[in-house]
Length: 313
Image (cartoon, rainbow, N blue to C red; front, top):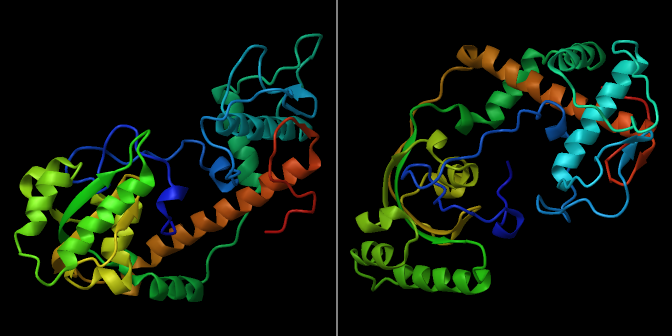
């Protein structure tokens, strides 16, 4: 995950600080449909709240939305990709072609047996090479921070939470003002805890913002990146000179102590790295496969990323 700015992340709707350590929120589980759909891009101009309106969305004449049904754009895309896969399985003779009569042109809901057939189709149709030892070694060399075990950071923070209806620029200005006060050489050591108690939207504010010892898995991805994976900030103690932006809001972060952990030898991680590279390669190949299906289909009423060129692994 790249370190995204706050405006590119969804606002928090039910509280949370991003650390995962204080119990005020938890990270969202990955989508069950990520094997294929996660590889497909979402148009940035649309959000989960966008509802399908006007034109009836269809895939090769099969209607995706029942009359009077409301569905948001992301769910519609997932349904469109499922229908593309079903139609491809029918074309290959793996699923029976439905007998479509008048009023029967709505995409059917896939049953478990049909989903198993599609999974087997994808196993056969989408192939990707095994990573070479050289590729695994290069990946190990480039991602050593991710493979380091036992590392932890003792952290305290002040959270300025972004909630529905909040004036984000004013909130950011308030956070910057507090950070400027704390970075003043004349600031007293106890001032951080005082401001945490006065300003923080995290329950840890009552304890001076102390989050205790955190491991990477304890944090939201963008918070973990700042604390563990950014070379210029993860290895030095003290107050971060800039606000840390997460999907939860703006954080003033003070790194109190560091446990650097240790890096296992490459030989201990070869199987893990090969599996990770294989998964990444398959996700890319699945994305290419779906774009090809989109490019060859007659898609109406919905924008899907497609390419009619042959699949290139």
